[in-house]
Length: 318
Length: 280
Image 1 (tube, helix red, strand yellow):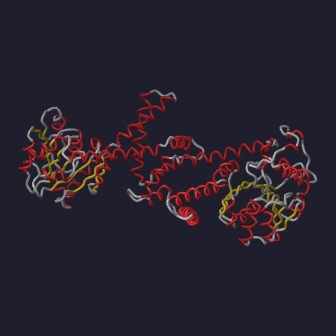
Image 2 (spheres, each protein chain N blue to C red):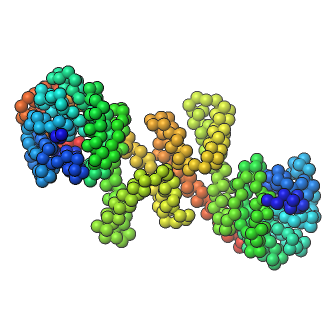
Image 3 (cartoon, rainbow over the protein chains, first blue to last red):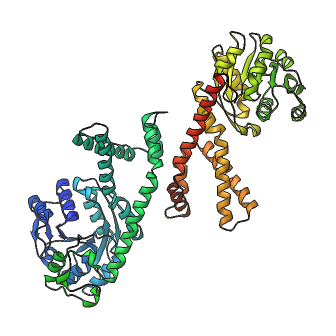
């Protein structure tokens, strides 16, 4: 079995690294493609022994399981480019936030009657084999395809099948989750530094505290509220700190964050469905390179709100 | 715990207010006979409901003390020194004096009574009146474990009875004494929310109170952590989680923690004042 990645960014790198570390597939059986060879992750992929190419078509031809690991708004262009190269054996797995299975199937059905499509939402800790992945199965994907994907993803963390309509919520929670955790640890470390600890030690201890707590929770049958109680001795330091957190609206902040991420995911889905790209969402160099690929056409109706390409500023991709 | 012992015990109440009444009712649900209970109060105003229970009434505190083994001092805090001074010379080593007065420390009580008096400080709460109280007691210097056990067995029909160090009594006051009022506030707000959404007030209040009662029953009887029960009510994307989010945004948890803190601090302050001889 061979695996291909369209896209050589964070997701492709994290999955490739996780898969190879887990030994579930050899690096030379993985191919990643991207028009942009300057990405730092391209270096990383090469170092792993993964085959790197600037040709998406080559990645398709060299694999059986094809991960679409590009930004959501690039997906339509990619599908147009590779649609005619998809064979019966291919299992297409989209990792793009907000992009529906039906939108992918619709595109591919221009080239093939029954494309096997799955959609997954994973997260970056797959790189250390502690990922959280959910997947939904498309119309023409078989049970074995689900099992295959699950086998791959379970090697790099937790993996479970869900209904597609739950995936946006998963994005908000565990897709974005690591970012919340990084922010939390950074801030906890600030607290440690303020109270006199050296920075490196503070970061280490903060991260370990989160890791340990998560491990306890995953290994326990108890509700997190109960585990919290177990840590709070009466009148002690922890309960005082928790009160401070509650006063700051800590819980509602986290609820808001998950909601915001989920809502934004749905917005992105909407944008992708329209195949309309907001100027702010495009990095000029990437779009230029994408448009240079053979087979990609620039549907002028799709980008009505853009000024001429030469005038596009260099915005960060969201 | 010892039915035979209970039925011989003579119980007295100095003070005929709500706390005394609630405790008396609870005691009578056990093995204590009404004929062995006596209550005193300066006026006859509150004595009727005791009489209806078959309890003997009097205006004489001394009479209550002399005729009782366990005496509940259930008068307003500022009256406690007066009452204790009055009855002090009638206290013997068979007596157990249980002070129910908020903010009056064991030290104060023991100071006013003969040396070696067995004294216990008890903090009940309002729902004692319907036998669903939360009661915490702390034993004084000469009160032994058996005295605590006796009190516990007398009170167990009043609700939840627990023992603790005296330091916990102020916390209990904040949590459960005042806590009852916090729950009333919450119930009122629930009802008002419903009224805002179009339900008639009387119905909204009736449902709100049953909701609080039902939730309370489930919480107590299930033995589950409230966080667990809360999770069980929240279906994904459902009404409850939306409502809870709004509550969290309102900082209800922090406010509630602070409320218990404020009430506890105030109880401590009052305790210090009364120990210093000041009035409430």
